[in-house]
Length: 245
Length: 70
Image (cartoon, rainbow over all chains, first blue to last red; front, top):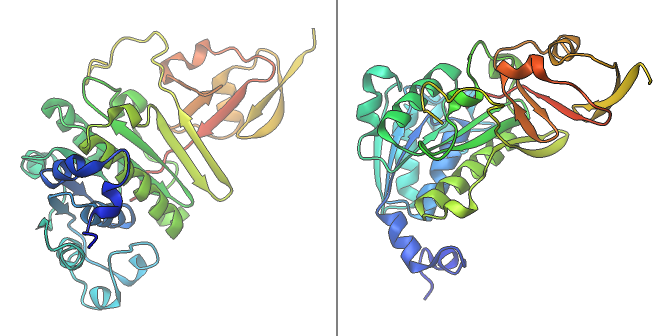
């Protein structure tokens, strides 16, 4: 009888050894909104052994059009997203370990939240903590996958300290973002698409398939459709003061 | 030599004065945000090199505003 993971173990890129590798992995998902909820669900279904689910917010009705993990009951009870996510993911895959952390990721607790992780997923909803994550991951040598979404567009970036540019290489002078979900909204399918792309890169990293990773920043837009991978160039500038790339 | 060249900006052909600088193009498109990503012919342009960019006929430019929502 086919098992839970049979169909993905048949993938040429995967196999039983890959499945065992996933089962022994720990991923920290930072932010459990439209990106993090969907990405966490894909990783849970794929059998990542331990997921640490981090978000300080509670589920609200205006989340439901794009945040696939939650339902009306979560919204009416204003359930903390970390707890709701752990409960729903546990119903999907009871063989994995789920840690619910209803905390805001910041400098003070960042190291604790990343402890023991093989990989972090940046599904945060503001620029500032993303740069905190960047600096911590550079310090810890921890790979991570960045994704962001606003309106019908977003981007995905794989960051491997020592091997790729860091987030500050791409954004040397971060400022107020031109796009904000509060003003520009978020298209539900755009969030799900970017979460899928992010989860896919995460699985490649966990499986040790660096050869198949994105090599630049994938910029994706759904409305009208456009997919582009931007290749990094330092343009003769000095190495990054944060990561040294 | 013509005084203008045609480049593509965000997928649309645009006639611009020869010698137009990248900061001028960014201003023309009201895209002056610190987090702007500029891509020319598929390659990221580092913000500290914007002044060194010289456009050529047929260049493909993308002015990308990253999305930091989740």
